[in-house]
Length: 147
Ligand SMILES: [Zn+2]
Image 1 (cartoon, rainbow, N blue to C red):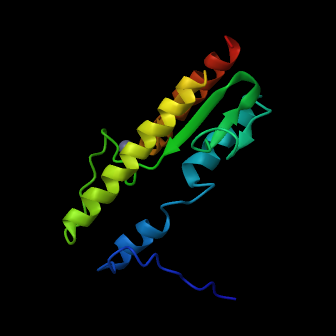
Image 2 (image 1 turned 120 degrees about the vertical axis):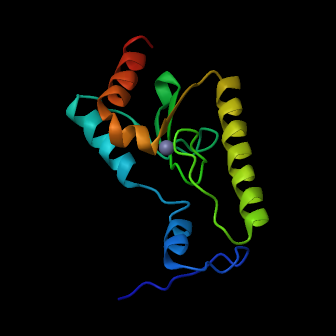
């Protein structure tokens, strides 16, 4: 059965399918870069992490609650990746600027909350996972080994 597509009525109607597709992916869990990272961790013998653990501020994508390590995989578009600098939609510019601004502020807030509680926060950009999975995996392994 085809799933009904429910639009967030706060957002302006997207002008083209491309924008629409990106919008509906906003709160996606198990995104491709995340799955790839998990696969890589598994292949390197890393186990025992939680997915979307709600007891930690910001519900980290991957976390090691015992070691207080939180990992976020940020989509370049929604979290405004500084490496990619993806263009804003051409229409409703103000709306999007405000929305992205809120996303960024939310990211900063959840990171601060975690740090205040003694967590280690690791943020990976989607593009870095795509181009340099090895470094991302090694970084997590190194941090796990010394905590
Ligand atoms: Zn990026």
